[in-house]
Image (tube, rainbow, N blue to C red; front, side, top):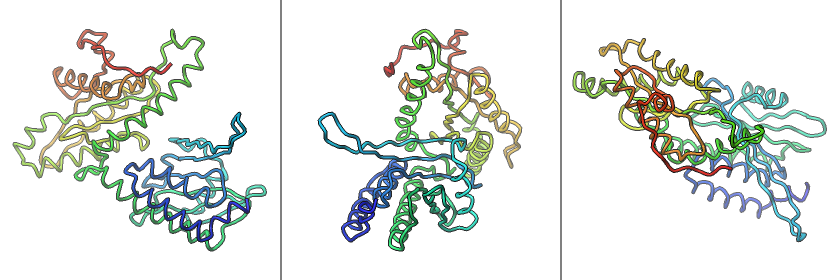
Length: 361
């Protein structure tokens, strides 16, 4: 452990600067987060680091846990094995960690507490002047003044760069994630879904015969008669409608759900739900929220939604296409309604088209 901490010498600082240069060349916020953990872990002589992201109310949105271990190959050679695990809720966060996060939140500065023979240490992550998350690690002693300076400096660089990247992935009008953000995140999302699908399959006696239920759903949402709104009230009022639609959708879905402005008056939501009934209720709740709201000058505005199970065995663009086909069916059926792809296929409203797939098993 002592040898590892010698990286805080001049050569260690040069290594940090080089890694920061690499980090700021990355254009994906998720990879930037991983790069931060990979940078600070070896520097501090620890094998595991964690990053916790919080929402505007301070609630935990998700955590990213990074660990590395030395593995001995059959030939006797050693290599470092890395693992990154993402968790989208706070149910599995240890009590000691939660209490430390609360302390840092209240104090507004780094804090630590004794856990057995080790110290659990936490630094706040800030962006735009507000708390955005926490950086956490554990080791057998506290930080030195030099380490403290390096950690704070690295977190400042990370936070500033992360904010820039996050801005580039946001729609300028609504503040939602934009289409570019959706495209660069689909592969990562599908990898996570594929891993979950494989885990579920392993829990079934015969995964080839047993239908494994979806737990994630992708919906395409469109504002009904939006062209008429623009033509009648002008584009400024039309933009205000889109902003308010975005806020109402955010209010309808959970913080952990993903919401994107796909283009024009069209949005995409990726939500978690245990079954079709729960997914239908979630999307219909969003539809009803919009239908009940009275927009200034315009009055009532409705939305139509088409959705499909986010099946990791099917290419993501095909899932979007299925949801989009369901959206058009909702429009043709009179608008202001929610339609599910597989249900429409079973009813004969839509014809299933053979598509590209991903071999999972």
